[in-house]
Structures are given as C-alpha cells and as structure tokens.
Length: 131
Image (tube, rainbow, N blue to C red):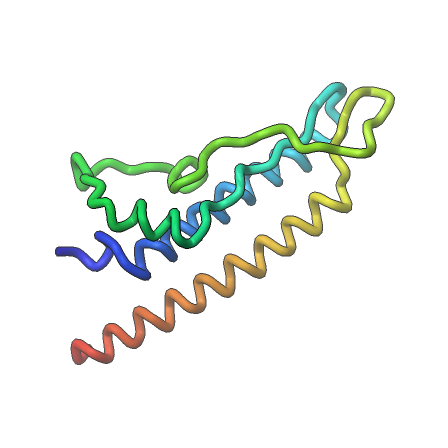
C-alpha cells in the first residue's frame, strides 16, 4: 500500500491540484480581459471534505504508474462554468481584472499554505522512518 492511496496525503494532493487548476482558469480570464464577447470562467467549487474523503477511500485504481496527467487537468474538479458578472463591457467582455487578481492572490496564499503543511507532514514522516 502506498502513502498516496488514501488519507491526508491524497487529500492534500487533490486540493493542491485543484488550486493549480484554479490558477490556470484565472490566468485564462486575465489573458482574455480585452477579448470581445469573452465570458469570464470559474472552476467548479472543490468538493466538501466529506465528499472528498469518501472518494479518496473508495479505492480508485490506477491503470499504469507511467501515465502522466497535467496538473491543470488533474484532480477531482476539472470542469469550469461561466461566472456571473455584474459588469459587462460594451464589447461583451465580463472579466473584472480587480476581482481576478484578488482571486489569484487568494489562491496563491492558499496553495502556499497547503504546500507548507504537505512539506511539514513529509518531514515528520521522514523523521519517523529515520531518514
């Protein structure tokens, strides 16, 4: 049994993958801020803790260890939806740059916190096995 089969490491990995996806969607919104008729997108919310725990312990099988999934498309939520925006430019663009940049900052801080916790957990695990 691998440490990534379930438990806290699996959940943290999924959350960090979700945050990476969110950053990719936010970057796409910012890049298209001047594109006529572009509708801002947002990532579907991360599943609740109970739902994520249930899916992590369901025993999902990996068909091949050599398969690589890009971080922007991996994880539990790869779907996007159009954001509801109160401001739409005359060109039909609904990207609010201030809101997008606040979301980028918030996501960055959350990812850094999760990465720090993950790193501390791995340090404790190494200490426990004597490395």
